[in-house]
Length: 249
Image (tube, rainbow, N blue to C red; front, side, top):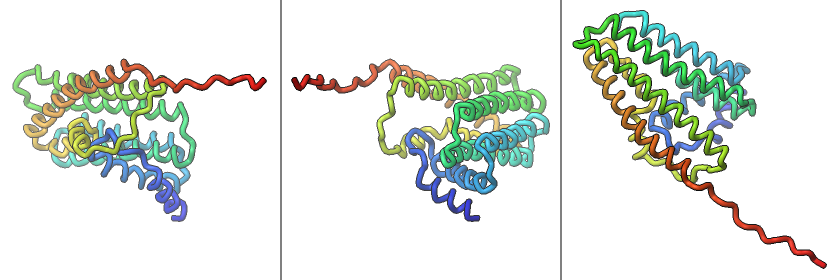
């Protein structure tokens, strides 16, 4: 219990900025991840082990979605597995900062798991649509494919932009988090997407909301792409000129 309390105290004082994240991530996922990171610290788990546990929960939800007929019970199970996996995805990074054991290999593993879950989750929706949904036209099967395309590009574009900014030494300005922006980002928040599966037993509303989020991802993909390109096209800030060192003689 002592290690848990110590970790909670340290993590509470060293949280990442809420700038650029949705309300769900700021007020639900990160706090849940903080508790799980503290529990992992108490159990002496490594950040990479937490990442693996996160993947186990997430892909359990994916397997339930692909293998079982849609129902309210299956939807609740899928939601629970995905949400816990998402919280653990936040916990591994927080644990790495707490212990100082972050590494390039750990960051690589985290990003690979994130990309894999997006690919697998939309493929599982595609399988479920094909096996269990009475769709009016086979072309509706293209919706998960388009959603997967948009979601993966948004994820990859964000990660790549962040890495290129680091290389070019272009730190983002330290601005306070915007509540309006946090609300606007909710349609492309993974946690909100997970909540859609609570409607899995009601196939009509589930399909409608899934399609609405697909459209939102396409719109945000265009907006983010323009924003990221402009940021990376801007000239890097110049260092102030230094006074020449004068010869004292």
